Each structure stands twice: as C-alpha cells, then as structure tokens.
Length: 210
Image (cartoon, rainbow, N blue to C red; front, side, top):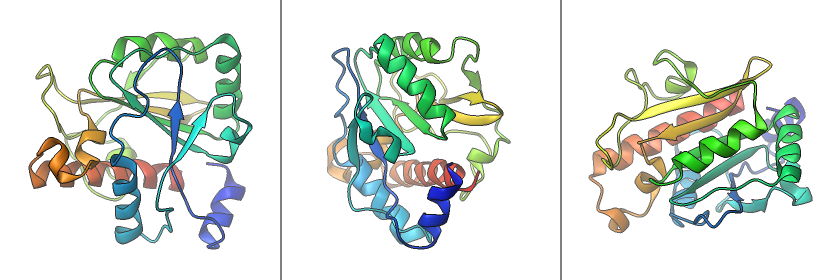
C-alpha cells in the first residue's frame, strides 16, 4: 500500500473504503449490491480501521482511480480491458494499487484472459495455505472457505506479484461476495456468511499491513 495513504488512514483523517470496479465487456460488475456495505460495516465493528459506510464505484479511465488503492471486482459474465485501460492498470499497480477479483461464477475465463494483458510476464499462481493473507486477522489453515458449491471444485486463491508485492488476489470457486450479502439474498448458513466475512476482513487487513 502507498505509505502516505497508510499514515493518513492511521491518523484518522481518511475513511477506508473499497472501490468497486466498473469494467467493460458486458459482465455484471454491479452484482451482489449489499455485499460491500456489509463487509465495510464488519471492518468498522471488528477492527481498528475506520471504514466508510459504502463502497465507491470507479471506472479504469476515471482520474479518481488512483484515489482508491483497494479495488474489488466481481460478476458472472464477460470482462474486457481496452489497450488504454491495460496501460492505466499497469501504472495503478506499480503505484501501490491492489485488486481483489472475486469470481461470482462465470467471470473466470474472461478475467484470466484480460489480466494476462496487464501482467504478461507474471502469471496467476496459487497461494499456499501458509501465505499471510490467510492469517492476517483470522486463521484459515486450509486456505479459502468454500461459500457456494457451483461446480463442486475446491476454492482456490490465486495471486499476481509485482516486485515481490501481491497486487492481485483472485478468489475462484469461492464466491465471497455472495457470503457478504444480506442473509435473505442467498439463504447461506450463518457459519458460511461468517467465514466469508472473516476472509474478506483478512484480505483488507493483509493489504493495509503489507
């Protein structure tokens, strides 16, 4: 994370928020509308971080992108980055930005296709279970929790590293965003929602402390 922003955050002059990425290609970037407000509320309640009540929404070409060092993207459909957007994202990550990409079942193939344009020499790699992102606030000794079954594949967490720093964390076959939603949206068991919220807090805390 940009060290200046971290100092401002700790000093209490900045409300941490998550910026939802509005991307092109036709996918439903707006999926799970109650998820991020619920996650931010739990960050406020359970940690010392002062979080905003709602997420921001930002497009890649929006000049405000660089005001939001923590991006989140989700969806079920197609993702497409233009050549200009690829260049902007490279600069964004080099400047300290971070992206949590959360496959909502259907985003996987297009996300993998597009993110390789941003990092052609840094492929997605599966993070081992002892990676600090699984232990930054809560303990997940077996990696990502499985929130929704979908194809009954194991949940996997993939990362892309830039100059030794994790800049993209991709949650696959997991669907954390569904677990963050209001309880009556998906009727997830309370324990699944709790696992999802705990993992979401872990990702944020990892970013803010590394």
